[in-house]
Length: 147
Image 1 (tube, rainbow, N blue to C red):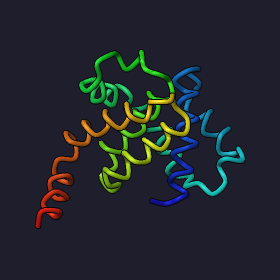
Image 2 (image 1 turned 180 degrees about the vertical axis):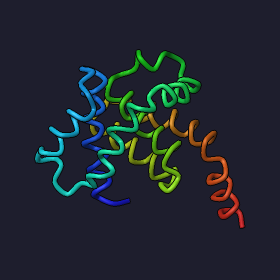
Image 3 (image 1 turned 90 degrees about the vertical axis):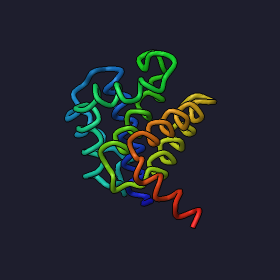
Image 4 (image 1 turned 45 degrees about the horizontal axis):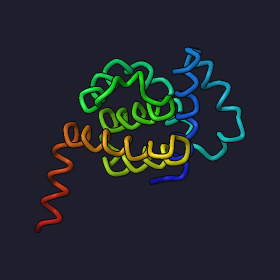
């Protein structure tokens, strides 16, 4: 888990939240946020990937997340929705990132920026999603623990 990736996720969360709330173009948000003080020391390539791919795949991500939710994703807190989308993208599209890292990073973002119990909600949804989309990785980890 690198600090530069953590910073990229943090800034991407800010950008994704803005995109959800304002519908500003991701490219416009990327250009502005890359110039911000918070962008120092981040993985700029990864930030850009998150900012372009999450909006591009939002329908698929939302569909995958909605299965595990009792209410509509659109009714959830804006920060939690952005965190869930970011975490879902990592679980589904970035198999190079261990599922536990993807979930932990999302939970930390929710703790830092979301509502008081938002991190528990994020953790629960992403755990269920991981169990579905990372079956091989999770079962390999389980086998390793029992041997």
